[in-house]
Length: 259
Image (cartoon, rainbow, N blue to C red):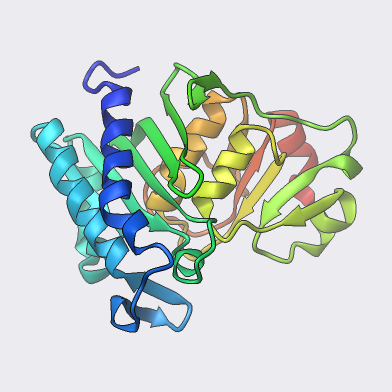
C-alpha cells in the first residue's frame, strides 16, 4: 500500500475527467474528431486526446514530481516509455481504452490509470464511464468495485471455464466452456477481477503497459495469478509474448500447454 496517494482522490479525478472530456463526446463524434494512427482499426479521437491531457495535468499536480506515460503521447514519441525506468512515481494512462467501441457508440470502453515505481504497480484504477463502474486497488490491499471487495472465480472443471481473448487459441477453446472478447482491456480486467470470466489471454504486439499494468495488479489483488506464457512475471513495460491470466497458479499451469 502506498501512503503517497489517496485512492478515493484519484478515482474522483478519473470520474471527473470522464464526465468533462469523454461522456459529452460519446455518440456525439464528428468525422473530424477521429484520426487513424497505424491502421484503419487503430484510431484516436478527440476524447482520447483531451482525456489524456486533462489526466496528465491533474495527476501530476496531485503528486508533485511524478511523470506520465500516456498512450497518445507515447505514440507520437516512443521515448516516453523510458520514463518508466526513472526513479520517480509514474502514472500510466490509457485515456480511452476501446476507442473503436467508443467511436461506434458501444459502451465497452474505459479509462485505465496505474501508478508505478521501479517497474512495480502500486495502484490501479479501471473505470467504465458508460456504466459508472470503477475497479480500484492498491498493492497488498485488495481490489474493490464501487466499494465492494472483489474475488476471482474458478470453475469445478475445465470444460466450464469462461475465457476472455481476442485470439483464436483453438486448442484452449476445445478444452474450456467458451470464450468471448470485450474489445477493451479495461472491460476485460473488470470482468476477470469480479469473476464474470475465469481466464484471460492477451497477445497484442507488444503487450502495452497502459492496457495491462493496472489490470494485472487488480486481478492479483482479487486473488488471481498471471504471468507471461514463458513463465516470466509481467512488469509494466512493453513486452513481446502472451500474457495468461488465471484464477490461480494451479489452473495457470494446467492450461498453459493449450496456449
